[in-house]
Length: 568
Image (cartoon, rainbow, N blue to C red; front, side, top):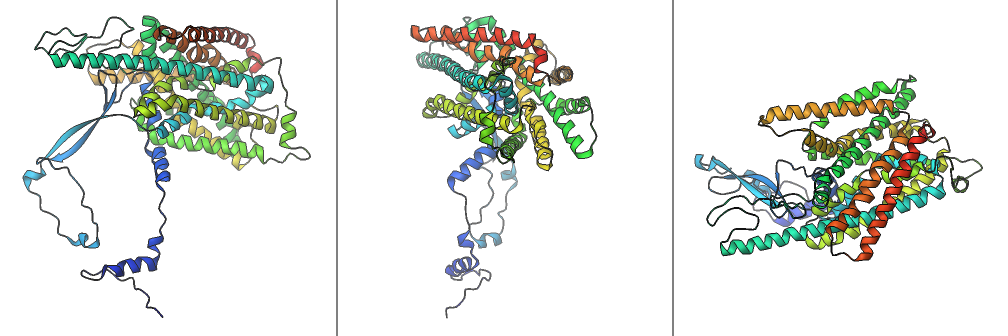
Protein backbone atom coordinates (compact mmCIF):
# COMPACT_ATOMS: atom_id res chain seq x y z
CA UNK A 1 0.00 0.00 0.00
CA UNK A 2 1.50 3.27 -1.12
CA UNK A 3 1.96 6.09 1.31
CA UNK A 4 -0.62 8.81 1.18
CA UNK A 5 0.94 12.22 0.58
CA UNK A 6 0.38 14.67 3.36
CA UNK A 7 -0.71 18.27 2.76
CA UNK A 8 1.43 19.91 5.40
CA UNK A 9 3.06 23.32 5.06
CA UNK A 10 6.00 23.62 2.70
CA UNK A 11 9.31 23.94 4.55
CA UNK A 12 12.33 25.70 3.11
CA UNK A 13 14.78 23.18 1.74
CA UNK A 14 12.17 20.43 1.45
CA UNK A 15 11.69 18.37 -1.70
CA UNK A 16 9.56 20.48 -4.12
CA UNK A 17 7.86 17.33 -5.45
CA UNK A 18 6.04 16.94 -2.11
CA UNK A 19 4.13 20.17 -2.81
CA UNK A 20 3.09 18.88 -6.21
CA UNK A 21 1.98 15.56 -4.68
CA UNK A 22 -0.04 17.43 -2.06
CA UNK A 23 -1.72 19.53 -4.77
CA UNK A 24 -2.61 16.36 -6.67
CA UNK A 25 -3.99 14.78 -3.48
CA UNK A 26 -6.22 17.82 -2.84
CA UNK A 27 -7.35 17.97 -6.47
CA UNK A 28 -5.85 21.41 -7.07
CA UNK A 29 -4.06 20.23 -10.20
CA UNK A 30 -7.45 19.42 -11.75
CA UNK A 31 -8.92 22.91 -11.21
CA UNK A 32 -10.70 23.99 -14.36
CA UNK A 33 -9.56 27.14 -16.05
CA UNK A 34 -11.56 29.02 -18.65
CA UNK A 35 -10.27 28.61 -22.17
CA UNK A 36 -8.62 31.51 -23.92
CA UNK A 37 -11.70 31.96 -26.12
CA UNK A 38 -14.03 32.15 -23.13
CA UNK A 39 -11.75 34.63 -21.39
CA UNK A 40 -11.62 36.76 -24.54
CA UNK A 41 -15.40 36.87 -24.88
CA UNK A 42 -15.89 37.57 -21.19
CA UNK A 43 -13.35 40.38 -21.34
CA UNK A 44 -15.12 41.85 -24.37
CA UNK A 45 -18.42 41.85 -22.54
CA UNK A 46 -17.22 43.19 -19.21
CA UNK A 47 -14.48 45.66 -20.09
CA UNK A 48 -15.19 46.87 -23.63
CA UNK A 49 -16.66 50.37 -24.05
CA UNK A 50 -16.92 50.30 -27.84
CA UNK A 51 -20.63 51.16 -27.94
CA UNK A 52 -20.40 53.98 -25.41
CA UNK A 53 -17.40 55.45 -27.25
CA UNK A 54 -19.18 55.08 -30.58
CA UNK A 55 -22.18 57.01 -29.23
CA UNK A 56 -19.85 59.84 -28.26
CA UNK A 57 -17.82 59.77 -31.45
CA UNK A 58 -20.93 59.60 -33.66
CA UNK A 59 -21.39 63.35 -33.20
CA UNK A 60 -17.70 64.18 -32.74
CA UNK A 61 -17.68 64.31 -28.92
CA UNK A 62 -14.42 63.35 -27.24
CA UNK A 63 -13.61 62.41 -23.67
CA UNK A 64 -11.03 64.33 -21.66
CA UNK A 65 -8.44 61.58 -22.23
CA UNK A 66 -8.91 61.44 -26.01
CA UNK A 67 -7.52 63.53 -28.84
CA UNK A 68 -7.60 63.48 -32.64
CA UNK A 69 -4.41 64.10 -34.56
CA UNK A 70 -4.21 66.01 -37.82
CA UNK A 71 -4.66 62.76 -39.71
CA UNK A 72 -8.03 62.16 -38.07
CA UNK A 73 -6.71 59.26 -35.96
CA UNK A 74 -8.11 58.90 -32.47
CA UNK A 75 -5.61 58.73 -29.60
CA UNK A 76 -6.09 57.71 -25.99
CA UNK A 77 -4.06 59.60 -23.40
CA UNK A 78 -3.27 57.63 -20.23
CA UNK A 79 -1.39 58.79 -17.14
CA UNK A 80 1.08 56.38 -15.58
CA UNK A 81 3.05 56.81 -12.34
CA UNK A 82 6.76 56.18 -12.10
CA UNK A 83 9.57 56.87 -9.63
CA UNK A 84 11.98 59.74 -10.00
CA UNK A 85 14.71 57.31 -11.02
CA UNK A 86 12.57 56.28 -14.00
CA UNK A 87 11.49 52.94 -12.59
CA UNK A 88 7.83 52.06 -12.97
CA UNK A 89 5.95 51.38 -9.74
CA UNK A 90 5.24 47.67 -9.47
CA UNK A 91 3.72 45.28 -6.98
CA UNK A 92 5.94 42.36 -5.91
CA UNK A 93 4.97 39.01 -7.40
CA UNK A 94 5.47 36.06 -5.08
CA UNK A 95 6.32 33.18 -7.35
CA UNK A 96 6.78 30.85 -4.38
CA UNK A 97 5.70 30.79 -0.75
CA UNK A 98 9.08 31.93 0.50
CA UNK A 99 8.51 35.31 -1.09
CA UNK A 100 5.93 36.04 1.58
CA UNK A 101 8.60 35.99 4.27
CA UNK A 102 11.07 38.19 2.48
CA UNK A 103 11.83 41.50 4.15
CA UNK A 104 10.35 44.45 2.21
CA UNK A 105 12.92 46.57 0.39
CA UNK A 106 13.71 49.88 2.02
CA UNK A 107 12.92 52.84 -0.25
CA UNK A 108 14.87 56.03 0.11
CA UNK A 109 13.22 59.43 0.28
CA UNK A 110 14.57 60.23 -3.17
CA UNK A 111 12.96 57.12 -4.64
CA UNK A 112 9.64 57.94 -3.00
CA UNK A 113 9.37 61.06 -5.13
CA UNK A 114 7.07 60.24 -8.02
CA UNK A 115 6.66 61.54 -11.54
CA UNK A 116 3.77 61.13 -13.95
CA UNK A 117 4.15 60.24 -17.59
CA UNK A 118 1.51 60.65 -20.30
CA UNK A 119 1.30 57.68 -22.65
CA UNK A 120 -0.26 58.40 -26.05
CA UNK A 121 -1.67 55.34 -27.83
CA UNK A 122 -3.80 54.95 -30.92
CA UNK A 123 -7.29 53.91 -29.86
CA UNK A 124 -8.78 50.81 -31.44
CA UNK A 125 -10.34 47.40 -30.83
CA UNK A 126 -11.06 44.03 -32.40
CA UNK A 127 -13.80 42.74 -34.68
CA UNK A 128 -15.32 40.95 -31.69
CA UNK A 129 -15.73 44.28 -29.93
CA UNK A 130 -17.26 45.76 -33.09
CA UNK A 131 -19.68 42.83 -33.32
CA UNK A 132 -20.90 43.38 -29.77
CA UNK A 133 -21.18 47.08 -30.54
CA UNK A 134 -23.40 46.41 -33.57
CA UNK A 135 -25.65 44.04 -31.62
CA UNK A 136 -25.98 46.27 -28.56
CA UNK A 137 -26.57 49.31 -30.76
CA UNK A 138 -29.27 47.71 -32.92
CA UNK A 139 -31.13 45.42 -30.51
CA UNK A 140 -32.99 47.55 -28.03
CA UNK A 141 -36.47 48.08 -26.60
CA UNK A 142 -37.84 48.78 -30.09
CA UNK A 143 -37.98 45.06 -30.82
CA UNK A 144 -40.96 44.84 -28.46
CA UNK A 145 -42.94 47.10 -30.82
CA UNK A 146 -42.60 44.65 -33.72
CA UNK A 147 -45.32 42.08 -32.88
CA UNK A 148 -48.08 44.73 -32.84
CA UNK A 149 -46.51 46.31 -35.90
CA UNK A 150 -46.86 42.96 -37.69
CA UNK A 151 -50.47 42.79 -36.53
CA UNK A 152 -51.28 46.28 -37.86
CA UNK A 153 -49.67 45.54 -41.23
CA UNK A 154 -50.26 41.81 -41.75
CA UNK A 155 -47.43 39.36 -42.27
CA UNK A 156 -47.56 39.62 -46.10
CA UNK A 157 -46.75 43.33 -45.78
CA UNK A 158 -44.59 43.35 -42.66
CA UNK A 159 -42.03 40.69 -43.63
CA UNK A 160 -41.27 42.07 -47.15
CA UNK A 161 -41.21 45.62 -45.74
CA UNK A 162 -38.71 44.66 -43.04
CA UNK A 163 -36.51 42.82 -45.55
CA UNK A 164 -36.66 45.77 -47.95
CA UNK A 165 -35.84 48.30 -45.23
CA UNK A 166 -32.89 46.15 -44.13
CA UNK A 167 -31.55 45.82 -47.67
CA UNK A 168 -31.77 49.56 -48.33
CA UNK A 169 -30.33 50.32 -44.89
CA UNK A 170 -27.31 48.08 -45.50
CA UNK A 171 -26.82 49.55 -48.97
CA UNK A 172 -26.89 53.08 -47.55
CA UNK A 173 -24.53 52.04 -44.75
CA UNK A 174 -22.09 50.74 -47.38
CA UNK A 175 -22.33 54.12 -49.18
CA UNK A 176 -21.58 55.90 -45.92
CA UNK A 177 -18.57 53.67 -45.25
CA UNK A 178 -17.37 54.31 -48.79
CA UNK A 179 -17.55 58.05 -48.09
CA UNK A 180 -15.52 57.46 -44.93
CA UNK A 181 -12.91 55.50 -46.89
CA UNK A 182 -12.60 58.23 -49.53
CA UNK A 183 -12.19 61.00 -46.98
CA UNK A 184 -9.75 58.90 -44.96
CA UNK A 185 -7.59 58.46 -48.04
CA UNK A 186 -7.62 62.22 -48.63
CA UNK A 187 -6.41 62.83 -45.09
CA UNK A 188 -3.70 60.16 -45.39
CA UNK A 189 -2.45 61.59 -48.70
CA UNK A 190 -2.42 65.06 -47.18
CA UNK A 191 -0.37 63.79 -44.26
CA UNK A 192 2.11 62.12 -46.63
CA UNK A 193 2.54 65.38 -48.56
CA UNK A 194 3.00 67.34 -45.34
CA UNK A 195 5.61 64.83 -44.15
CA UNK A 196 7.55 65.18 -47.42
CA UNK A 197 7.41 68.97 -47.25
CA UNK A 198 8.48 68.94 -43.61
CA UNK A 199 11.52 66.83 -44.53
CA UNK A 200 12.62 69.52 -47.01
CA UNK A 201 12.13 72.28 -44.43
CA UNK A 202 9.42 73.98 -46.48
CA UNK A 203 6.11 75.09 -44.92
CA UNK A 204 3.39 72.44 -44.77
CA UNK A 205 0.32 72.62 -46.96
CA UNK A 206 -2.42 74.77 -45.49
CA UNK A 207 -0.07 76.63 -43.17
CA UNK A 208 0.71 80.36 -43.01
CA UNK A 209 4.13 79.98 -41.46
CA UNK A 210 7.44 80.93 -42.98
CA UNK A 211 10.53 78.84 -42.61
CA UNK A 212 11.62 78.57 -39.01
CA UNK A 213 8.17 79.36 -37.64
CA UNK A 214 5.86 76.79 -36.05
CA UNK A 215 2.31 78.00 -36.40
CA UNK A 216 -0.71 75.72 -36.43
CA UNK A 217 -1.94 74.79 -39.94
CA UNK A 218 -5.21 76.34 -40.97
CA UNK A 219 -8.18 74.31 -42.15
CA UNK A 220 -8.91 74.62 -45.87
CA UNK A 221 -11.76 76.96 -46.74
CA UNK A 222 -13.25 74.37 -49.09
CA UNK A 223 -15.59 72.11 -47.03
CA UNK A 224 -14.90 69.25 -49.44
CA UNK A 225 -11.24 69.20 -48.40
CA UNK A 226 -10.12 67.36 -45.25
CA UNK A 227 -9.62 69.57 -42.24
CA UNK A 228 -6.09 70.14 -41.00
CA UNK A 229 -7.19 70.60 -37.41
CA UNK A 230 -7.67 66.97 -36.46
CA UNK A 231 -11.39 66.46 -37.06
CA UNK A 232 -12.90 63.07 -36.28
CA UNK A 233 -14.69 61.56 -39.27
CA UNK A 234 -18.35 61.04 -38.36
CA UNK A 235 -21.70 61.01 -40.13
CA UNK A 236 -22.23 64.76 -39.46
CA UNK A 237 -18.63 65.57 -40.48
CA UNK A 238 -19.00 63.64 -43.74
CA UNK A 239 -22.26 65.50 -44.34
CA UNK A 240 -20.43 68.80 -43.76
CA UNK A 241 -17.88 67.89 -46.40
CA UNK A 242 -20.63 66.91 -48.82
CA UNK A 243 -23.34 69.52 -48.17
CA UNK A 244 -21.40 72.40 -46.66
CA UNK A 245 -23.56 74.59 -44.42
CA UNK A 246 -26.66 72.51 -45.23
CA UNK A 247 -25.17 69.69 -43.16
CA UNK A 248 -27.00 71.22 -40.20
CA UNK A 249 -30.11 69.46 -41.55
CA UNK A 250 -28.40 66.10 -41.03
CA UNK A 251 -27.32 67.00 -37.48
CA UNK A 252 -30.83 68.23 -36.72
CA UNK A 253 -32.31 64.99 -38.06
CA UNK A 254 -29.99 62.87 -35.91
CA UNK A 255 -30.94 64.89 -32.82
CA UNK A 256 -34.68 64.58 -33.54
CA UNK A 257 -34.40 60.83 -34.14
CA UNK A 258 -32.51 60.22 -30.89
CA UNK A 259 -34.88 62.46 -28.93
CA UNK A 260 -37.75 60.52 -30.47
CA UNK A 261 -36.29 57.22 -29.31
CA UNK A 262 -36.07 58.67 -25.79
CA UNK A 263 -39.67 59.85 -26.12
CA UNK A 264 -40.82 56.27 -26.66
CA UNK A 265 -38.92 55.32 -23.49
CA UNK A 266 -40.91 57.93 -21.56
CA UNK A 267 -44.06 56.14 -22.71
CA UNK A 268 -42.81 52.58 -22.36
CA UNK A 269 -41.54 52.60 -18.75
CA UNK A 270 -44.62 54.26 -17.11
CA UNK A 271 -46.92 51.87 -18.99
CA UNK A 272 -44.95 48.90 -17.69
CA UNK A 273 -44.83 50.18 -14.13
CA UNK A 274 -48.60 50.69 -14.08
CA UNK A 275 -48.96 46.98 -14.87
CA UNK A 276 -46.39 46.03 -12.23
CA UNK A 277 -48.01 47.99 -9.41
CA UNK A 278 -51.43 46.71 -10.39
CA UNK A 279 -50.21 43.11 -10.29
CA UNK A 280 -48.30 43.44 -7.02
CA UNK A 281 -50.61 45.68 -4.98
CA UNK A 282 -53.88 45.65 -6.92
CA UNK A 283 -53.77 49.45 -7.14
CA UNK A 284 -53.85 51.21 -10.51
CA UNK A 285 -51.76 54.38 -10.42
CA UNK A 286 -51.79 57.01 -13.19
CA UNK A 287 -48.97 56.82 -15.73
CA UNK A 288 -48.13 60.42 -14.98
CA UNK A 289 -46.79 59.53 -11.52
CA UNK A 290 -44.22 57.16 -12.96
CA UNK A 291 -43.41 59.61 -15.75
CA UNK A 292 -42.54 62.33 -13.23
CA UNK A 293 -40.35 59.92 -11.27
CA UNK A 294 -38.54 58.89 -14.43
CA UNK A 295 -37.91 62.51 -15.47
CA UNK A 296 -36.45 63.35 -12.07
CA UNK A 297 -34.15 60.30 -12.10
CA UNK A 298 -32.99 60.71 -15.71
CA UNK A 299 -31.98 64.38 -15.36
CA UNK A 300 -28.70 63.66 -13.47
CA UNK A 301 -27.71 61.18 -16.19
CA UNK A 302 -28.10 63.97 -18.75
CA UNK A 303 -25.30 65.86 -16.99
CA UNK A 304 -22.73 63.15 -17.73
CA UNK A 305 -20.33 64.22 -20.50
CA UNK A 306 -18.33 60.98 -20.72
CA UNK A 307 -20.89 58.19 -21.13
CA UNK A 308 -18.16 55.56 -20.96
CA UNK A 309 -18.77 55.84 -17.23
CA UNK A 310 -22.14 54.17 -17.89
CA UNK A 311 -20.44 51.04 -19.17
CA UNK A 312 -21.48 48.79 -16.29
CA UNK A 313 -25.10 50.00 -16.33
CA UNK A 314 -25.14 49.36 -20.07
CA UNK A 315 -23.93 45.80 -19.48
CA UNK A 316 -26.74 45.35 -16.95
CA UNK A 317 -29.24 46.75 -19.45
CA UNK A 318 -28.00 44.35 -22.14
CA UNK A 319 -28.35 41.34 -19.83
CA UNK A 320 -31.85 42.41 -18.75
CA UNK A 321 -32.95 42.90 -22.36
CA UNK A 322 -31.64 39.42 -23.21
CA UNK A 323 -33.57 38.01 -20.24
CA UNK A 324 -36.73 39.84 -21.29
CA UNK A 325 -36.57 38.70 -24.92
CA UNK A 326 -35.84 35.10 -23.90
CA UNK A 327 -38.77 35.14 -21.47
CA UNK A 328 -41.24 36.63 -23.96
CA UNK A 329 -40.20 34.12 -26.58
CA UNK A 330 -40.17 31.24 -24.10
CA UNK A 331 -43.72 32.00 -22.96
CA UNK A 332 -44.85 32.10 -26.59
CA UNK A 333 -43.15 28.82 -27.53
CA UNK A 334 -44.23 26.79 -24.50
CA UNK A 335 -47.68 28.24 -23.97
CA UNK A 336 -50.60 25.82 -23.67
CA UNK A 337 -52.58 26.17 -26.91
CA UNK A 338 -55.18 23.54 -26.02
CA UNK A 339 -56.43 21.72 -29.11
CA UNK A 340 -54.43 24.06 -31.35
CA UNK A 341 -50.68 24.65 -31.68
CA UNK A 342 -48.33 27.52 -32.30
CA UNK A 343 -47.85 26.49 -35.94
CA UNK A 344 -51.62 26.51 -36.50
CA UNK A 345 -51.87 29.93 -34.88
CA UNK A 346 -49.20 31.26 -37.23
CA UNK A 347 -50.97 29.90 -40.31
CA UNK A 348 -54.15 31.72 -39.26
CA UNK A 349 -52.50 35.14 -38.99
CA UNK A 350 -53.96 37.86 -41.19
CA UNK A 351 -51.86 38.42 -44.36
CA UNK A 352 -52.82 42.08 -44.90
CA UNK A 353 -54.52 44.66 -42.70
CA UNK A 354 -55.96 47.08 -45.25
CA UNK A 355 -56.71 49.80 -42.68
CA UNK A 356 -53.30 50.27 -41.03
CA UNK A 357 -50.67 48.51 -43.18
CA UNK A 358 -48.99 51.82 -44.08
CA UNK A 359 -47.94 52.43 -40.46
CA UNK A 360 -45.37 49.66 -40.66
CA UNK A 361 -43.29 51.53 -43.26
CA UNK A 362 -42.04 53.92 -40.62
CA UNK A 363 -41.83 51.22 -37.95
CA UNK A 364 -39.56 49.08 -40.15
CA UNK A 365 -37.00 51.91 -40.30
CA UNK A 366 -37.46 52.90 -36.68
CA UNK A 367 -36.36 49.40 -35.64
CA UNK A 368 -32.72 50.30 -36.26
CA UNK A 369 -32.98 53.11 -33.64
CA UNK A 370 -30.55 55.37 -35.49
CA UNK A 371 -27.79 52.75 -35.54
CA UNK A 372 -26.61 54.01 -38.95
CA UNK A 373 -24.96 56.88 -37.07
CA UNK A 374 -22.80 54.27 -35.30
CA UNK A 375 -21.50 52.64 -38.48
CA UNK A 376 -18.62 55.07 -39.04
CA UNK A 377 -17.48 55.21 -35.37
CA UNK A 378 -17.53 51.41 -35.18
CA UNK A 379 -15.52 51.23 -38.40
CA UNK A 380 -13.02 53.69 -36.90
CA UNK A 381 -12.92 51.67 -33.67
CA UNK A 382 -11.45 48.63 -35.45
CA UNK A 383 -7.69 48.78 -35.00
CA UNK A 384 -5.84 46.93 -37.78
CA UNK A 385 -6.17 47.64 -41.50
CA UNK A 386 -7.07 44.01 -42.16
CA UNK A 387 -9.95 44.14 -39.69
CA UNK A 388 -11.10 47.50 -41.01
CA UNK A 389 -11.43 45.94 -44.47
CA UNK A 390 -13.54 43.11 -43.01
CA UNK A 391 -15.91 45.38 -41.06
CA UNK A 392 -18.44 46.20 -43.86
CA UNK A 393 -19.07 42.50 -44.56
CA UNK A 394 -19.27 41.82 -40.81
CA UNK A 395 -21.83 44.60 -40.40
CA UNK A 396 -23.98 43.10 -43.16
CA UNK A 397 -23.87 39.59 -41.68
CA UNK A 398 -24.67 40.71 -38.14
CA UNK A 399 -27.55 42.97 -39.21
CA UNK A 400 -29.06 40.24 -41.43
CA UNK A 401 -28.91 37.83 -38.50
CA UNK A 402 -30.57 40.39 -36.23
CA UNK A 403 -33.41 41.04 -38.70
CA UNK A 404 -33.95 37.29 -39.18
CA UNK A 405 -34.44 37.02 -35.43
CA UNK A 406 -36.77 40.05 -35.55
CA UNK A 407 -39.05 38.32 -38.05
CA UNK A 408 -39.14 35.08 -36.06
CA UNK A 409 -39.73 36.92 -32.77
CA UNK A 410 -42.50 39.17 -34.12
CA UNK A 411 -44.38 36.38 -35.91
CA UNK A 412 -44.17 33.98 -32.96
CA UNK A 413 -45.25 36.53 -30.34
CA UNK A 414 -48.12 37.85 -32.49
CA UNK A 415 -49.46 34.32 -32.94
CA UNK A 416 -49.04 33.52 -29.23
CA UNK A 417 -50.52 36.67 -27.70
CA UNK A 418 -53.30 37.24 -30.25
CA UNK A 419 -54.73 40.29 -31.98
CA UNK A 420 -55.16 42.09 -28.66
CA UNK A 421 -51.39 42.49 -28.41
CA UNK A 422 -50.14 45.89 -27.27
CA UNK A 423 -47.29 47.98 -28.64
CA UNK A 424 -45.30 47.38 -25.45
CA UNK A 425 -45.23 43.59 -25.66
CA UNK A 426 -44.50 43.21 -21.95
CA UNK A 427 -47.98 44.62 -21.19
CA UNK A 428 -49.50 41.64 -23.09
CA UNK A 429 -47.81 38.90 -21.09
CA UNK A 430 -50.09 36.57 -19.09
CA UNK A 431 -50.25 37.67 -15.42
CA UNK A 432 -47.78 35.97 -13.15
CA UNK A 433 -44.43 36.20 -11.44
CA UNK A 434 -42.46 35.75 -14.66
CA UNK A 435 -44.42 38.47 -16.45
CA UNK A 436 -43.88 40.90 -13.59
CA UNK A 437 -40.16 40.06 -13.51
CA UNK A 438 -39.88 40.71 -17.24
CA UNK A 439 -41.71 44.03 -16.95
CA UNK A 440 -39.43 45.17 -14.13
CA UNK A 441 -36.30 43.92 -15.91
CA UNK A 442 -37.17 45.64 -19.18
CA UNK A 443 -38.10 48.87 -17.39
CA UNK A 444 -34.71 48.93 -15.65
CA UNK A 445 -32.96 48.13 -18.95
CA UNK A 446 -34.73 50.95 -20.79
CA UNK A 447 -34.04 53.34 -17.91
CA UNK A 448 -30.28 52.72 -18.20
CA UNK A 449 -30.39 52.78 -22.02
CA UNK A 450 -32.01 56.24 -22.00
CA UNK A 451 -28.79 58.23 -21.28
CA UNK A 452 -26.93 56.53 -24.13
CA UNK A 453 -29.68 57.42 -26.61
CA UNK A 454 -30.11 60.94 -25.28
CA UNK A 455 -26.42 61.89 -25.31
CA UNK A 456 -25.99 62.51 -29.08
CA UNK A 457 -29.21 64.53 -29.27
CA UNK A 458 -28.31 66.62 -26.22
CA UNK A 459 -24.80 67.35 -27.48
CA UNK A 460 -25.97 68.36 -30.97
CA UNK A 461 -28.74 70.58 -29.57
CA UNK A 462 -26.60 72.23 -26.91
CA UNK A 463 -23.74 72.92 -29.32
CA UNK A 464 -26.15 74.56 -31.75
CA UNK A 465 -27.84 76.73 -29.13
CA UNK A 466 -24.74 77.67 -27.11
CA UNK A 467 -22.56 80.60 -28.10
CA UNK A 468 -18.85 80.61 -27.42
CA UNK A 469 -18.06 83.12 -24.68
CA UNK A 470 -15.27 83.90 -22.28
CA UNK A 471 -17.14 82.36 -19.33
CA UNK A 472 -15.22 80.08 -17.00
CA UNK A 473 -15.58 76.32 -17.30
CA UNK A 474 -17.69 75.94 -14.14
CA UNK A 475 -20.26 78.51 -15.31
CA UNK A 476 -20.43 77.00 -18.80
CA UNK A 477 -20.91 73.52 -17.37
CA UNK A 478 -23.66 74.73 -15.04
CA UNK A 479 -25.53 76.41 -17.90
CA UNK A 480 -25.11 73.31 -20.02
CA UNK A 481 -26.63 71.10 -17.32
CA UNK A 482 -29.55 73.48 -16.81
CA UNK A 483 -30.36 73.43 -20.52
CA UNK A 484 -30.05 69.64 -20.64
CA UNK A 485 -32.44 69.35 -17.68
CA UNK A 486 -35.06 71.49 -19.40
CA UNK A 487 -34.74 69.43 -22.58
CA UNK A 488 -35.39 66.24 -20.63
CA UNK A 489 -38.40 67.86 -18.90
CA UNK A 490 -39.78 69.05 -22.24
CA UNK A 491 -39.39 65.59 -23.70
CA UNK A 492 -41.26 64.15 -20.72
CA UNK A 493 -44.13 66.60 -21.20
CA UNK A 494 -44.49 65.48 -24.82
CA UNK A 495 -44.42 61.87 -23.61
CA UNK A 496 -47.33 62.60 -21.28
CA UNK A 497 -49.57 63.74 -24.15
CA UNK A 498 -48.43 60.91 -26.43
CA UNK A 499 -48.76 58.09 -23.86
CA UNK A 500 -51.65 56.41 -25.73
CA UNK A 501 -49.90 56.55 -29.11
CA UNK A 502 -46.64 54.67 -28.67
CA UNK A 503 -47.01 52.79 -31.96
CA UNK A 504 -47.87 55.99 -33.84
CA UNK A 505 -44.85 57.80 -32.42
CA UNK A 506 -42.51 54.99 -33.48
CA UNK A 507 -44.04 54.90 -36.98
CA UNK A 508 -43.86 58.66 -37.45
CA UNK A 509 -40.27 58.85 -36.22
CA UNK A 510 -39.22 56.10 -38.59
CA UNK A 511 -40.90 57.60 -41.65
CA UNK A 512 -40.30 61.31 -41.01
CA UNK A 513 -36.73 61.13 -39.67
CA UNK A 514 -35.43 57.55 -39.85
CA UNK A 515 -35.89 57.21 -43.63
CA UNK A 516 -34.02 60.44 -44.53
CA UNK A 517 -31.17 59.64 -42.11
CA UNK A 518 -30.95 56.02 -43.27
CA UNK A 519 -31.71 56.24 -47.00
CA UNK A 520 -31.66 59.74 -48.45
CA UNK A 521 -28.62 61.54 -47.02
CA UNK A 522 -25.98 58.75 -47.27
CA UNK A 523 -26.63 58.18 -50.97
CA UNK A 524 -26.62 61.89 -51.81
CA UNK A 525 -23.37 62.25 -49.88
CA UNK A 526 -21.84 59.37 -51.83
CA UNK A 527 -22.69 60.95 -55.18
CA UNK A 528 -21.01 64.19 -54.06
CA UNK A 529 -17.91 62.79 -52.36
CA UNK A 530 -17.31 59.76 -54.63
CA UNK A 531 -17.01 61.73 -57.86
CA UNK A 532 -15.30 58.86 -59.71
CA UNK A 533 -17.97 56.25 -58.98
CA UNK A 534 -19.52 54.49 -62.02
CA UNK A 535 -22.70 55.90 -63.55
CA UNK A 536 -24.58 52.74 -62.59
CA UNK A 537 -23.76 53.27 -58.90
CA UNK A 538 -24.76 56.94 -59.08
CA UNK A 539 -28.06 56.00 -60.74
CA UNK A 540 -28.76 53.36 -58.12
CA UNK A 541 -28.02 55.92 -55.41
CA UNK A 542 -30.58 58.30 -56.89
CA UNK A 543 -33.12 55.48 -57.11
CA UNK A 544 -32.70 54.74 -53.41
CA UNK A 545 -33.03 58.47 -52.67
CA UNK A 546 -36.26 58.59 -54.71
CA UNK A 547 -37.65 55.59 -52.82
CA UNK A 548 -36.74 57.28 -49.56
CA UNK A 549 -38.45 60.54 -50.52
CA UNK A 550 -41.65 58.74 -51.54
CA UNK A 551 -41.63 56.60 -48.40
CA UNK A 552 -41.09 59.65 -46.18
CA UNK A 553 -43.96 61.62 -47.70
CA UNK A 554 -46.48 58.79 -48.04
CA UNK A 555 -45.83 57.07 -44.70
CA UNK A 556 -45.65 60.30 -42.69
CA UNK A 557 -48.79 61.76 -44.25
CA UNK A 558 -50.89 58.63 -43.86
CA UNK A 559 -49.73 58.12 -40.26
CA UNK A 560 -50.70 61.68 -39.32
CA UNK A 561 -54.05 61.60 -41.15
CA UNK A 562 -54.96 58.25 -39.54
CA UNK A 563 -53.51 58.99 -36.12
CA UNK A 564 -56.51 57.63 -34.22
CA UNK A 565 -56.27 54.25 -35.98
CA UNK A 566 -53.10 53.38 -34.10
CA UNK A 567 -54.31 54.43 -30.65
CA UNK A 568 -54.40 51.82 -27.87
